[in-house]
Image (tube, rainbow, N blue to C red; front, side):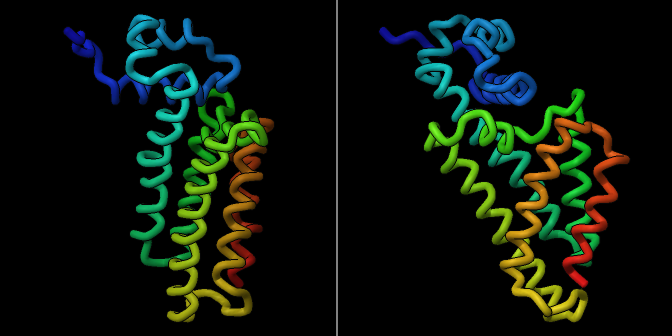
Amino acid sequence: MARTREFDTEAAVTRAMELFWTRGYEATSVRDLTQHLGIGQGSLYAAFGDKDGLYRAALEHYRTTLAAAALRSLEEGADARAAIRTLLTERIRIAVGNGGQGCLAVNAVCERLPQDAATRRTVRDMQDASREALTEVLRAAMERGEIAARHDPHTIAAFLVTFLNGLLVSSKITPDTSSLEPLVEVALTALD
């Protein structure tokens, strides 16, 4: 007779996401995970297969919660420039937290690529979604005359995603919002 799972899988994934985000994949051992999650090693393996399976679940959880919420807030903004500014500054605020934890997705790319194709796919999906959402916001803003139409909205969106990636890496080096937020204003000049 199969044993029933005695822990909340979703809560475990959330806690694992936080640990991987703070420490990284390589620096997080299975023992660290079982202690942090309060579960046995057998339970971890039964639920996720292995450490890598739990890491993938944590990245997916990040994609469907925090990354998705950022895009929803972007789409809800009435003024494109203000919405993009808020998106970028909010990402800075989160990334400088805990002494410069950065962004889980960008951290994953820096730590796991080029060898980890699954991580590449997951993060590429996140970036594609960001680029598509930004493209639509920019296209609508251009049609309303809010921002200059001198550049293709897809190109500006790709620039903003690339800028954000660099900003998130920089947040680990200089975890200081007062140093990073002025850079957002410089990036927003691309909309002029």
